[in-house]
Amino acid sequence: MSAEPTPLRQNVKRRENERAILAAAEKVFAEAGYGGATMQLIADVAGLPKANVHYYFQTKEELYRQVVSNIFDIWLQAAGSFDGATGPAEGIGAYIDAKMELSRTHPDGSKVWASEVMHGAPIIQDYLENILVEWTEGRARVIQGWIDAGRMDPISPHHLLYLIWATTQHYADFGHQVETLNGNVPLTAAQWDEAKTAVKTIVLKGIGVCG
Amino acid sequence: MSAEPTPLRQNVKRRENERAILAAAEKVFAEAGYGGATMQLIADVAGLPKANVHYYFQTKEELYRQVVSNIFDIWLQAAGSFDGATGPAEGIGAYIDAKMELSRTHPDGSKVWASEVMHGAPIIQDYLENILVEWTEGRARVIQGWIDAGRMDPISPHHLLYLIWATTQHYADFGHQVETLNGNVPLTAAQWDEAKTAVKTIVLKGIGVCG
DNA sequence: GTCTATACACTGATAGAC
DNA sequence: GTCTATCAGTGTATAGAC
Image (tube, rainbow over the protein chains, first blue to last red):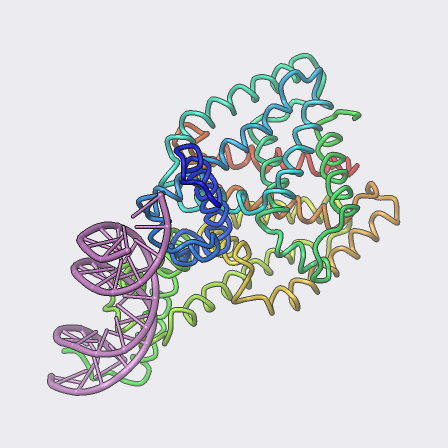
């Protein structure tokens, strides 16, 4: 009934397995940290024997690096909200929305990223020093331009960005604490909207933009 | 020359060793996470044989619990800035200052706390559900009182607190990223003041308080 | 390509001499 | 109280049958 595995089929299987392993790894690394995560548990969550995980990703560190790398890419995509904005209200507002949405849909990725940075970014220091520095300086210049044009208050662009990163990612990284303070139930869709509105209201008004 | 160890002397030695172990543990747990930290490394940093660490703290988990517990206490002390404030400008401003100062002087503790919460607070969930919930609800009522009195904008107190926690702790938890974006050098005293001012400016203006 | 069995290193914890 | 030596358990990684 079933045909012999063709090269195409094998490639499909390979991609499926790699995706399953990466998804499982993101979850396990987020829940247990790099040191606490085990290849055995990642294999179990992915539904594969441990040796297969090592077949696709030779070492634990290589798998971890791939996970962190994927997260960083997603993170950078949200940065697009900044570009093509006609002013601070639109640009910063859309950026906050995008990052809040990422915290809602991708909490595990955010946690892995936070963990990596908290431990001194041993794996992705080169990303930080190159891509992130470049991105940050570019956006800081955009913000400074808005300030020079009198479209918002003279706030240090870097500290403004830190405040936005910290607050939006808090809903993912400290999601467990937020849930506990919410009576041990996850935020509802309405509460997520409330959070987005509260953050945007404070930030935009705080930098002197009407909204 | 030296006298026999008296009970007093032994107690002093005991306290010194415990303090050294706790300080080393905080540092190692912050840098490597719970799973990545080893009793051997903690012992080395503390300058003691590994067996001695086990003599004072029977298990790794017990030592970790003690570290997290200490951090939580320090965290709650900063909360005092809120009490006795005559209004939102003073209360929230002082609270931000206190939390920023904690991030500057106690970054390791902040990281351990963040790591613990990110992994679902397996050790200190009872603290969260009791002490933190109580503290948060109490302060939320204070803020709501200021709102009702027309002294600040009608912002959701919980989301305001999350924004303050996230932003102030970001300078500790993501200190490595901040440093990288600062040209690979730590923030100077002047830059810390700049950060404090930026955060307070955005938050206070953002909630409709003149300052 | 897939999976079982296993080598090898390391960790938390403890026993027992001092 | 202190420290050396060691055990039991677990982790990453791989060899080799299929």
